[in-house]
Length: 90
Image 1: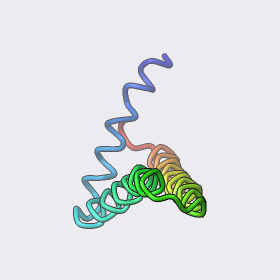
Image 2 (image 1 turned 30 degrees about the vertical axis):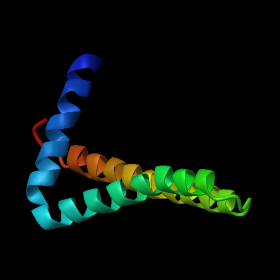
Image 3 (image 1 turned 180 degrees about the horizontal axis):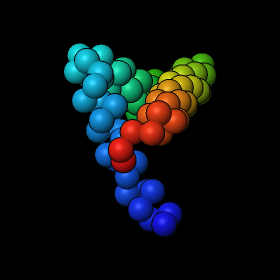
Image 4 (image 1 turned 135 degrees about the vertical axis):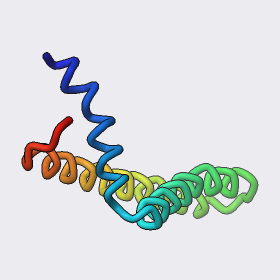
């Protein structure tokens, strides 16, 4: 029974994304990609330059990426709860 529930989660996510505006979803993906790409860029920048304070920027970008991804997963979880609470077909 649990396997059936886990198989249904991607369908719920597709329904949520289909209902939302396509532009809103694309904007969210762009933000996630940009923030995630900032981490290796900051590591690359800090490794090339000799200033030790550049590593503070690496730490800040890691914290920022973690916070943004955490918020995204929190929002996704809330949407899944709402979708399943209204008894949508999964």
